[in-house]
Image (cartoon, rainbow, N blue to C red; front, side):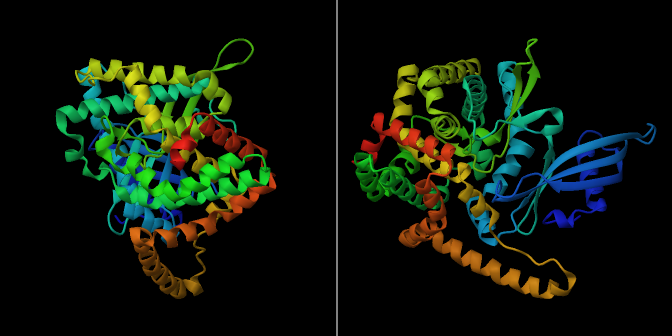
Length: 472
């Protein structure tokens, strides 16, 4: 059955078909009859720009075999479609984000979990929402997974950032991913089995103008403060050197000690924690963690995930007081796991790991600088709300089909230009224009959380000499 392309296309027949496919993986004789289903948006406007996320709740009758009595069952699901914005869709397809996420849920996590269960006694399992159904062709894309919110999982508010306990648990889980995928690769050649995760320069090609424009926003922000001339000079010089510096640290895989599967978007909003009430004062303790949103996962330097988490999702005070303990905990977990699975990394004691972390600290700063602006600014939310506005009334349908085809062809042309290195200056100017509202918000100073988090990140980077590296 053809999959719907958006929430508007979800039908009872498709829901029934999809759930039968899911139940047949457990029992080929199972039948599902949908009694009712309801859909609603999973995100608020501005929270997701690269997908349409829908919550799908289903009441159904399940019969596992012809001899068994039927039972009523409720399914609580998340359905993910490609965004209806043509430009964003073309970027996603060019980078292969959609394929990687579907592969991660449908094949990779099961493969890696079987491997670690065999070689490490199931001590390092990877936790994702359960995969229900997926389809990925040139014309169809849908991913259906378990809605873990009904099980009590929730994200930590992005404006608060992660405290030490939450960050430490997140690091434990990412160390498992790195260790298990590294060990698996030694035995089975991960990229030979899952080639879509091979490092793609297309991602950094698109990311570089975003970094360049975000640096411009930082320069405007610091100039408005009138007390950071030295940092402004370093950032202005760094904008010129940025393509070379970024390529040396990110694109040149030969410079990295070793590679593994990385999450790529490892920050606060992609971590879902489950808490339980602790003592009599009602203080909650963390019971478990599930990782979501795997579109940007790829075979890369594992320390980039650590940089991403620390620079995007923690406060300066948390990093000052606990970064060393966080890094030691990661290294211990990774080392114990790879050793347990018979693939210890040679010449990788804590001092060598820390040296690699510091060597790539510029990438961490740039990641944090971009994501803080994009996720904590009100202007960023307004940018994400933009995109194609489709007319849905029946009388306009013929016109809509024509317009969508024109938009689709235009999007392919624009994205082809965007990913051409010769068009870097055009892309820089275009992205800068899109991100200018964030610069105005920073200069106005109306968003205290945004301004303080970004200023802390800039001051910390300058104190550690990262801005000096950028401007060399």
